[in-house]
Length: 410
Image: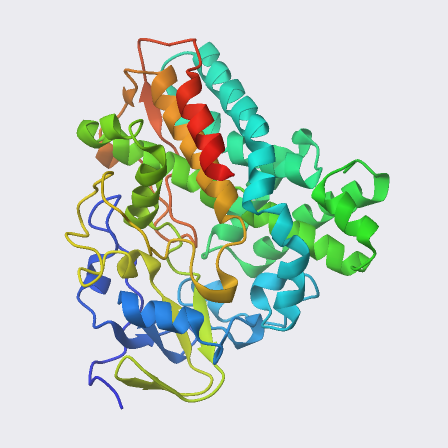
């Protein structure tokens, strides 16, 4: 049955940089959505229905079945099945095989081993930022390099490749980019992975270990590396920049960050929920859920920013409260496709955000908040630039917060 509401396009305009689109707030937990290619599907905004769909094996992430809700050029492109190794767009059992191979590389034990690298890259970024002088762009000087360098080190990719990978990932993230531009961006990252595998530069990195296992063919290895590079830094970088942005506008919450970084980061993840339009599922069979019947072949956009602001699950959800327990939030998804790198992302956020405000105790925005450019029509929401200024630089590196983050990651 239908809720009787007309099918509307996906609303993307946000009332503030930190709040989900207002139009989506007015929708039912599961409502009809008009896609740019003419497809009639759904959008889920309620917590319970979103979590249920994410956990339901009757819904697929196969690329050839998914419709694109934003971006006319990308939406009318005929999707093709994912190549071997592109595991985010594969269903079990193929998806399960890749997750099994990769799981220990991103688990708590491996993240604990990476903590020195996370601290090292964070401290280097802070020194470079200070050396460059005030004002500065926190996106280019802090948020982007830290996760990019960490994922390059994890995979065994040279740090010199970082900027080329970042530029290509930005194109892939832009839902309004032309299909040819997106294909070129994929080609850039794929070529980087092939070069690493061909000349042995990956050393003891994940790519070298995966190749040595003999379980994956060349095409699988290349595509796997492309996925990990493309997805292994942009979401974390976006959270670092957006998290710093919101804390710079709320001194009371900023003061609470160092008290309990683990709890604070979980609340920031819930409140900001940067995966906004690209978490999608298509029904493989007719499914009755949330009081609606979703027909086989219909695509559902899972609006995680709205689900994480559901007042039925999170009291006073539009208030950022770094002391609350945000347990159960869906910022990393749910079910078998839950974000593979969530432990690494959490560790990077805890270390980098606490260190940022310790290193620059009087850090402030260099422009009014309304002048900070946001990425409203990107698959991963965030800011393009974050101009900041400071007067004081604290050079010592407090050990307490770093050791706390290391313990949490283990």
